[in-house]
Image (cartoon, each protein chain N blue to C red):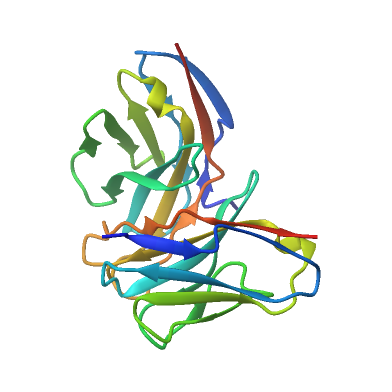
Length: 117
Length: 116
């Protein structure tokens, strides 16, 4: 079974609208973390936001927020007021467990977001 | 502060040739990783290292070897390249994972490898 599932291969959104990128995960660990990365056309991977499984609040970083629904095992990325520069691939990733021995990230297949002027 | 750098940026190999990809980081990170990215597959972990002199296998280690002789460098070797190893290779580094687990990985710019 896929550990990270991103069901939207591509999305087109009008500039200035909000956009939600879906991510569901599968783990039996109680302790885990979820990451979102952005990959623009230039290729580099840029860290956006982190949510820990025990965090009581949904994570926010500027225009990025994470809609974390633990019971549904979903960690959707919300981008408010989208900009042309948001056009990129977006990857959801999970780290299972914490501390030494739990260094690995498992990535989803990504969603290509295109912002339309 | 260059972050994570990768050498070379692009390489073309013939089947059976060997090569080494170099990753260097100047953030004093303990952990380093090698991934490959293929269309529609996301990033998959090849090998990783939790400290100088240590290495471990990831999800897709076959056909690759690694070495971490210095803390700041992590080498990925292909002994006999195959067309299936055509991919974009990313190196990453991070601090050790702490109690909250929020330590992100910092990625290099990638190396595009084409095996003919």
